[in-house]
Figure (cartoon, rainbow, N blue to C red):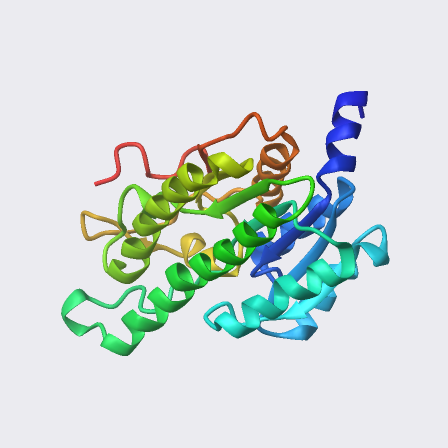
Amino acid sequence: MGHASAVRCALMSIAVVTGAGSGIGRAVARALAAAGWSVALAGRRAEPLAETAAAFPDPDGALCVPTDVTSAEQVTALFGAVRDRWGRVDLLFNNAGTFAGGGVPVEDLDPETWRSVVDVNLTGAFLCAQAAFRAMKEQAPQGGRIINNGSISAHVPRPHSIAYTATKHAMTGLTKSLSLDGRPYRIACGQLDIGNAATEMTERMRTGILQANGELAVEPVMDAADVAATVVHMASLPLEANVQFATVMATAMPYIGRG
């Protein structure tokens, strides 16, 4: 590691990762830990968080905080625990999400399912970003970075995915607003739009998933570690630089030309 990179890591070293008990969240948390970050792991269940932390090179660099991101009280407690442990928050990877209701036609989608997706994917992301923003604004030295997990669905939908797609489009607005409002306080905000990372959520890609033309097709996937490497790169930049929007995806997935 070069001197400049070492200085950046020393100054910006405390991360919060939501949805850290599995999939992309787990891969990112482990990659940040391997890069020298201390990481607070947030997710609904304690056991998966502990499994994620078990792979950290330094056990003291992990803080597991079971958290329901739809609860303002629990999100406040999460960031309070991080500040009590390490004194500051330098990075939030806003990753918790659900694909509930995926595959259900618009006319059959239950309103409660719609609300649950909005609660997790949008309200949960806002609550975590708000808590991180407050911490980053108040701490000294001031500032930090928020990276929102968007999706290819922030650009184009899949069939029968209206709740997920709507929330991921909304995530783009959240990212832009945070970027603008964070400028006076050295708070950078970017968005990573991910396509077909190999996780539990994308298992259906390997057996065949509905396409826009009505056919079922197997889609290529990529290793979640490649997503994690992108997050680590974005996180390692000085606050004077920001990856505003990035897309990392399986090269041959049907995104360019979809539909």
